[in-house]
Image 1 (cartoon, rainbow, N blue to C red):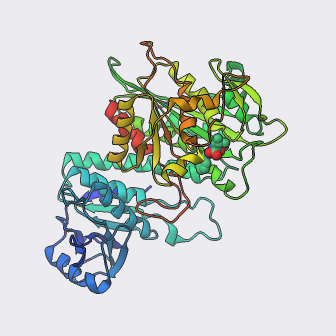
Image 2 (cartoon, rainbow, N blue to C red):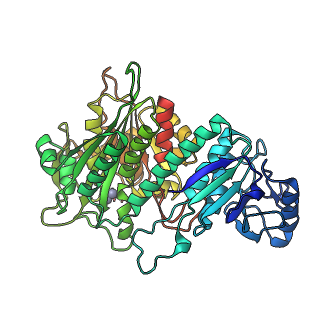
Amino acid sequence: MTTLSLTGKDATTVAADALVLATTPATDGAGSASVLGADTLPAGVRRALESALPALGVKGTADEVVRVPSPEGVRAKVVVLTGTGRPGPKDQTVPDEALRRAAGAAVRTLAGHAHVVLALPTDTVGRVAAVAEGGLLGAYAYTEYRRRTADPSQAAVAKITLATSAHRDRGAKTAVARAHVLAEAVAATKDLVNCPPLDLFPARFAEIAQALGTEHGVTVTVLDEAALRKAGYGGLVGVGQGSSRGPRLVKMSYTPAGRAAGRKHLALVGKGITFDSGGLSIKPAAGMETMKLDMAGAAAVMHTVVAASRLALPVAVTGWLCLAENMPSGTAQRPSDVITIYGGRTVEVLNTDAEGRLVLADGIVAACEENPDVLVDVATLTGAQMVALGNRVSAVMANDDDLRDQVTRAAADSGEQFWPMPLPAELRSSMDSPVADIANIGDRFGGMLVAGLFLSEFVGTGADGETVPWAHLDIAGPAFNSGGAHGYTGKGGTGVAVRTLLTLAERLG
Ligand code: BES
Ligand code: ZN
Ligand code: ZN
């Protein structure tokens, strides 16, 4: 993994492969871009570079990364100018997320270089955190399956030095330690999403969870297919029965050390379909290959639990990974089959491609048996999510307005885009079944909300007899970047939801 350290040295004296500076557009839109001041950057060097910006055509816009030869007095081999885009309209300062993206875009484009020094504005601990996170998130490459085409110029930057006069600040040091844990959790989530489904199937996923549990002090229990059948987990069994590689339910519990009194308990449930062919309601061939992403929720949950343990958060976090492979075969479930979810509700399976809600229903019922204070599920659940919000904005639905707000705030503060969506009760009747308690599909319009309403039926009551506060995150589009790289986000798996969930856990503690 990439390491990042702080230095209080003048950034121009660091013997790195590249020195990264931030540029920003002229505020009036007409003048030339400027180089953002950094307290470790001599004013002379800044002015010299700035005077060249118009001739270089540097605009300072987001995702503009320009390499220029190092001017006199700069020890790094090359200077990289990374644009932040316009400052916020209210206070005329560059938002933390713009710095995070600018740092990430630079480090991402510098793949193949060993050592990069960042000299971006770091006048607050929040900005130190943003720059550190952006740099570490941008330092990611998935090269696991390259052999003859392995290329050193694709290797992620190995070492980042962040030049800041806050290098001795305790808050800054804590922020860097947290950024490492966070970026490693996100990178590990991306690795799992990028992994071909030939090599990542439910039993393998469960093994990975067990190994991580042993390494990081998280208790892991695994139910295999026979155990699931015996205990009545009809959703996981039904979805998994078409595959030769059976389903698993993995429970990962992180319990903080010390006194238990008053400690909160966060339960996380993740959709872990290691491949979603659609089952007998098979998907069209075009685009089916992206369905290796369908375990992104479970991967995010697993690595959030690990990160919570590594950061020793004062909150109990339990992750439930609902793992199955959705395949068509002679043993697959059929449209019109009726299955019984853990706890006893029956579901008529009218479309075997609406499988995520079936495995999540089992996980949600199981999670509620422990009376958590807060329950959040994360899933690449519906194509309708992408119709509603596109590829970069995830949806939050909830049975509790405060929790929904908490999630969107945690997301915004950590640099992920989540937007609130409703659960309109009138859509429920579209899932009425002539034979079972509920059908697994309903109105096509508002398909994301229908899926959310389906899940809401399985949220149980806590110790106080009240319904458990629950939020549902649909990350179908944002989990995988099929387009071009941008900011700190490369192609492929994005690790979305890890940062939001970890921030939420921190704030519950
Ligand atoms: N895994 C898919 C949802 C998905 C689609 C995720 C595209 C990421 C990108 C899910 O299991 C699915 O197939 N949902 C169906 C539900 C429908 C049959 C009610 C869908 O959205 O089409
Ligand atoms: Zn599906
Ligand atoms: Zn799916």
